[in-house]
Length: 400
Image (cartoon, rainbow, N blue to C red; front, top):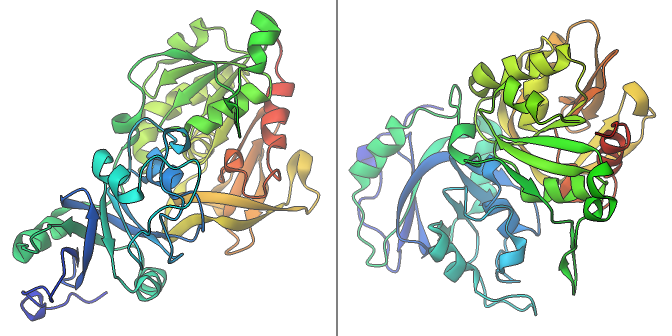
């Protein structure tokens, strides 16, 4: 994309403008700010989901990103403590067509702007999100700064320099910034209306339940809830936990979580651990970043995608391995990097493929109980298309 002339950008905001998006090429888009005040820099991406905005904004995989929601009405059901994927936000902010309306939902305890302000998330409304999405689709995900100032005063030159100085996600290890700092057990099961998060199945099973050590590279909490629902006893460990520390926990299997950033950068410390687990024939299940890291450990390479996949309507076909039956799952995705299927070595089978662009969405390692998928089976967009993956993993584990 050819750089624009920054001096040609409008320096004075139009009447009523309290927010702005400044792209690294000098493009300036004025709007109405909401949520937290301030400025944040990151990669501009788009998400096609019609629901789940609170879960999206607290998904650690969105660290370093500003989310453009293609659905125009965001905020209709407000916000509540139960719909968060982590205890705090991960994204920089969001861009919407319309200002969030007053919520109409019995579970709401805050408006979206109130919740975003408390979380430090910057919102920008009044933007032609269709035009911005087409720009991302055609030109790739740009770097930009989203800013909100209630008095409508902005230093555009400073914001432009901030956008131009951001290095981008390629080569960036963000897992270390969003991982849990300490090891801990996970007990909560999945959420049900009227009962909140149910008690875990493994509590009833006691210590006889298969013990899963889950490596947190920036995990969504609902993944751990689904592991519990499938019957596992779960211990969550930080991203940089060593091979010896994991083995000392005597896992029946190891789970590799989703997370943000470049898998090749995170792989500098994660891949040697995964290779060690494979050498010991420890069963492994990976999701999203965990899928990419397993791919690298198996000998494949990853690539930065042009625009990434983000939304709750992505068709994925089962093309190989144990489930190579041609069935199509409707999946939820959030990734800007992918395993390059052309680099899969002998002994690594492609199990799932995107029907949007043919990119790799799953692998299995021949002769080992190790498999992974690029999409998010815990997000239930199908809504139950992909839970079988948790059952497959936990059901195939031995007991302590």
